[in-house]
Image (cartoon, rainbow, N blue to C red; front, side, top):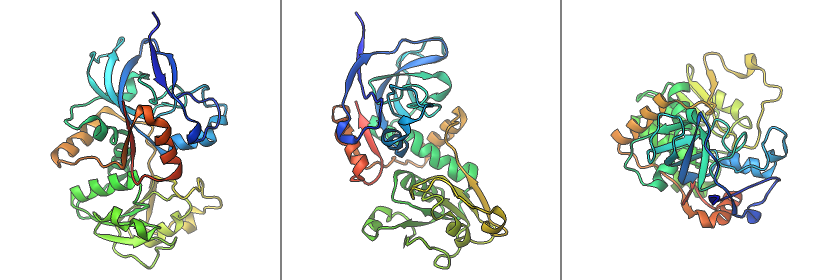
Amino acid sequence: MEKRMRAVVLDKPTKGENVVLSEIRIPEVRPGWVLVRVRAFGMNHSEQILREFEIQNDYIRKPIIPGIECVGEISDPSDSFFSKGQKVIAMMGGMGRSFNGSYAEYVLLPVHHVFAIKSELDWAELAAVPETYFTAWGSLFECLQLKPEDTLLVRGATCALGYAATQIAKALGCQVIATTHRENKFDLIKEADARVLDDGKLTGRIKGVTKALDLVGPRNLKDTLTSVDHGAIVCNTGVLGGVYALNGFDPIKDIPNGVYLTGFFSNYPSKGVVDEMFRFLDEKKLVPVFGKMFSFEDIRNAVIAQDTGSVDGKIVVRM
């Protein structure tokens, strides 16, 4: 008898209110891939972009199950070094675009983007980690070379990635300046040492910033570059501002002398970095932050919440 599972399956632009669960066949394993029983997954802005318009592009496999990350257990290890029942996380590498992703009870994944973990976090807390904390970790340490003595600017801090970056930086011992463009969200960044209302211009309003994580993106990036101290590093990781490229950007004129610009692309996680990140979370006794948890049966309302922005922070979905 054919084994079946529930999943979100998309083949065209789809609004949240039109998202439904379908019943489809559980994928069959093949060499180099493992079958993961999904216990929970986090939702991401990139999945919203996929649903709204990106799915129309030819490079998106259709029909597609969205979802760029998940946490769960190995159901079938195939020819890999994993064992059945092993606790794992998975993220990126084409999930939810080149092949089916995590909005499903089971997902077939390439072994190189699946990572065994040891953690006492519950499934919902764990679901807040993979893509969000990996992106924060890579941005802060690989790109910004963050040190305890740094003063970190987190621009666009009232998003899941902003919360994670602030939490990690404070645990490291840094001073953190967090911004939001809505004054009614100040309570959401109370962990920061200073909170700034962002009207699009920070230059001349803040001082002492040695590292900056810009999650707003190209819309305000030039201003971020001129708001930091000489010798500072700026990392552009997010695109919350809805502008995806710097048209007419002149690196010679627009990057101040002695300021360094980098960016983080999260498509290449590694076992070493994942292990290091979980060691840090464990040693610092950090509990990953998320905004709200939905059941998989309630996925429609989870997606509506994402579309309307009614949840502050990460939305997680648990099976």
